[in-house]
Length: 146
Image (cartoon, rainbow, N blue to C red; front, side):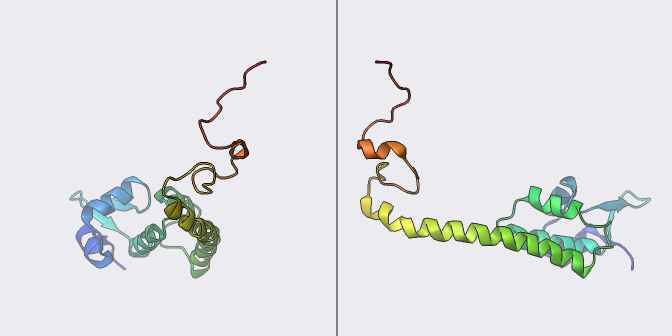
């Protein structure tokens, strides 16, 4: 199948040409140059951009996406199994983040109800505060010899 021009790739993927240039600079997609110095992309770039967009919506950083792509075979040769392995790795990370967010959500009422974001009892800003048992007030930065 013939390669596609950057304008067609942008139209079909739903991202701007400048976003494709950005992804290319980050090593997420690759192009080749024609004799007239125009960029051409393998059709595999459509799948990669779809995965990039989905991963970004899930909060996965571009650096993590790039690491996953680097582990794949050469462009155009990734199999369904390759994409499923990537999906499973991201799913595990998402499960961990969901659990953390659910835990944090459970403590929001304390902060909103408190109004002062008291460090003496705030599990969001100051979890496991060892000095909270000593009462509220300034934080001890160093211990005096005495």
